[in-house]
Length: 317
Image (tube, rainbow, N blue to C red; front, top):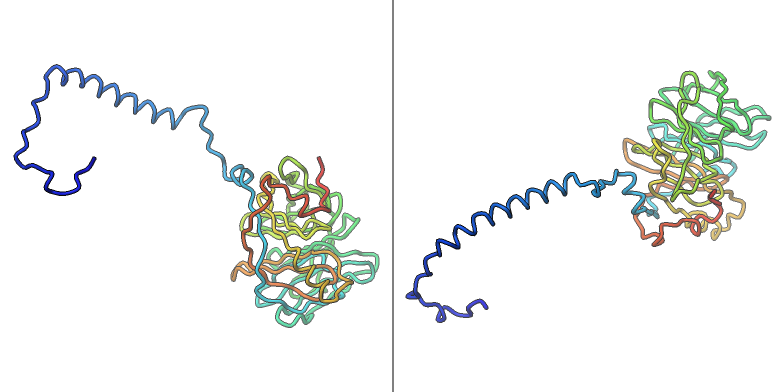
């Protein structure tokens, strides 16, 4: 036990006994053996076959991440716009693709007011879908067709058509080099922006289950974010292997619109990312509002399951 006062210490205490020479010689090999054992343990820790360094994606899957949101700001959004594609165009503008036969369009929108600055009305037999911007070209796909269009971002009358080999046209996004596409299934495509040929295709999965109904897309910080059709959920996907690394739950947005009397709204659809200012925008089909939100981590289900939170996703097994 440690001394409690200096009075218990004796400066005249007898010196410690001289070490026994025999014990000294016995300790030397023991010390050497202990040092050798420590070195072996360090090597084993570094190279033992039972040690597995989880790659970042596997680590994320082992500990799923879930997000809700804080509302930063809300903006007016055309309540007649059946939003199918959305992206940030710089200088507080958005580009938007809208759907429905005889009502489909491509438009440039002023963010602060919701005012439509430029508008192209599509042919009545075309149902507009996903939209993305690469350089000065807007790429758009159409529903139930393999047809798409490329517009000059500064002049929608300058356009050309293309065909693609996805099963259908739902969502589009880009990392600035290639295009990412969805067709309403669990497939995520990588397309060559020049030939529109499929360069790669991965199956999107979460907890070994396929995630179907991938809809509008946005590329953000190395991930492809996808609206999952008929849910209030956004899946954040690793484009390399299709693994869902986290989920965003936006149920409150549609619920609040309903509570405000907006009963004619459709599903959540539309993600836009202002990379320069790190602003995230979301909206939905026929929604009168567009929202700037900031993500907030939340605790998810202990088992990581999202089927109760995204009940209409109907994950394939």
